[in-house]
Length: 336
Image 1 (cartoon, rainbow, N blue to C red):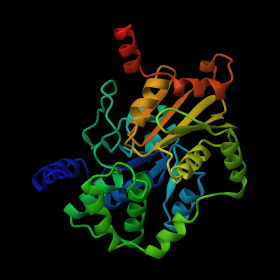
Image 2 (spheres, rainbow, N blue to C red; image 1 turned 45 degrees about the vertical axis):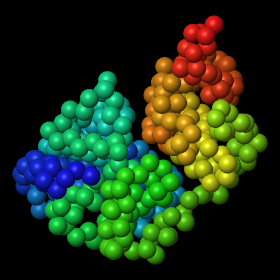
Image 3 (tube, helix red, strand yellow; image 1 turned 30 degrees about the vertical axis):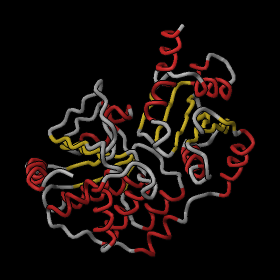
C-alpha cells in the first residue's frame, strides 16, 4: 500500500482530470472485480464530472456475474465505436489497453489495474495506477474511497467485497495486506445476505456436461498438475468455472482446462501459486502462438486454432504442457 502522502498525491492528480463539462465512459471486460471497480470510479466521479456511464466489451454469461449485475443493479451498456463521439474522457479499470483489441484504439485518460505490467506494452494515459502486487483492483478503489472519505453505499461495498473475493480466490491466491485491509473495511458497509445470494449462483444446468468431459479427459501433467480438454465450448467462461472447481481438489497443485471457442483455443490455468508460476508457465508454453500470461496462481492462454496446424488440439496442448522448460533444456545441453 502506498504511504498516505503518496496516495494523496496520486488522488490529487486523478481529481485534477475531472470537470463538470466533460462526460466520462468507464470501460471494462466485465467480471466481478472490473464491475465493482467501475462502480467505485463512477461514485468518485459523481458531482465532479458530467455524465458518467459504464460500458462492457464482453457478454456477461457466468451465472455469478449475472447475479451480481442483477442484484446490485449495475448499469452496464454494451460498447461499440458509435459511443465514442458522446464522451470526452475514457477510463479503463481492471485491465490494460493491450489486454483486448477493443481497448487498443480508445484514448484513455485513466487506467487503474492490478495485472502485471508488460514492458512491450507500456500504458499511456494521463493517470496510470497499476499495482501488480495487489490481488484485486477493487482493493485499490477501496483505498481511494477511504482516502477521499467517501462512505460506500451497501451495493457498492458489496460489489467491492465480491471483487476482492473472486480475484483472490477467497484469499487463497496472491494477496496483499492491502486486500485484507480493504476487505475488512468494506465488510462493515456491505450486505452479507446479498453477497451470499451472489456467491451461490455458480452453475447453470446446461454446464454440467462440461464437468463430465473434464472428469473423463483428465490427465496428470508436470509438477503435480493436471490437464483436461472440454472440446468445443459455447463460452470460454465455462473453462474458468471448471478450472475453479478443480482448485478445491486435495493434492492437485495446478490445473489447465482447455477448450475451443469458435476458431480460438483457450487454456485456463489455476493453481496454488507455490509449486509453479502459472503466468510464466503459460507464457513460455503458448506465448509464441498468441496471448498468454497472468499471475502465479491464475493464468490464461489464447491462440488461433490454426496454430495447432491441423493436429489434434487435445494432444497438441497436452504435449506443450509436458515439454521441458527452456531452463531445463539448457541444463541438459550444458551437461551433454
